[in-house]
Image (cartoon, rainbow, N blue to C red):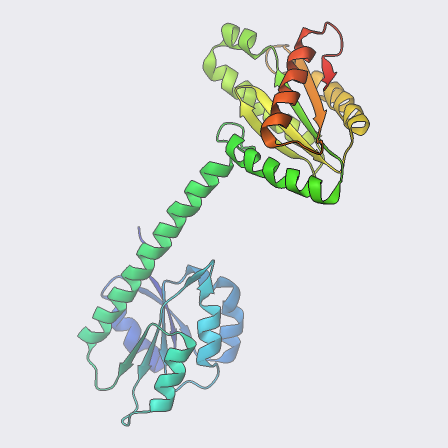
Length: 299
């Protein structure tokens, strides 16, 4: 059910009731703001409203303050001013539109006109809000891997490029780690693909909880992961990996099976680009998988 909520700034409860009675017939739910205290209490909760109607004669809050607080998450809730003055006030009209209101209704007016304008601005804002939700969701899908809920491969590639530029400018240590749940194929063969995906998801949670807040963790492919360690040299990274390996190796993934891990490590170098760093860390990982002890290799 669509939430059609309108905020109404009025001088009195009686005036509010007149508007509310009209709007309820068309499926709108209304809330009254009748003084500055009500406005102050409302500000943190204004985002749930789809439209604002203001009696032009109120003095307890300015049009600028109303419009300013009507901006939520980059969208402006439409504000309609209703002017019941008998005489035209050009200064008030200029002030309202300069502040950014969506519409201005001047007396004489009738119920049909108010409803038509309310419907128009509500529908435009609803479409805009739905479009923003879709765009935000697509952006989220592009940056977050949906199985592991970690940083996506595409997002990590962008982060790597940024960190390479940062490294070249400030000469701070940067290390990249490539690791894999090496026995995932075996586990999938035993328990099936669906259980295998659950294992990867569970392992991702444990891995994320085991690294530092400053580190960037991404699922690269399958059961392969990349960790970017800023302000960390090779030797410090090796110590971190040994500690990480100990913590992860003790985790039971399913029916007594524990993760078998391999780690490749490399650092950023002066003439590196993203492709060179990735090729080097993958080579280190491949060499780590060949080892019978430790399964950690530095390139």
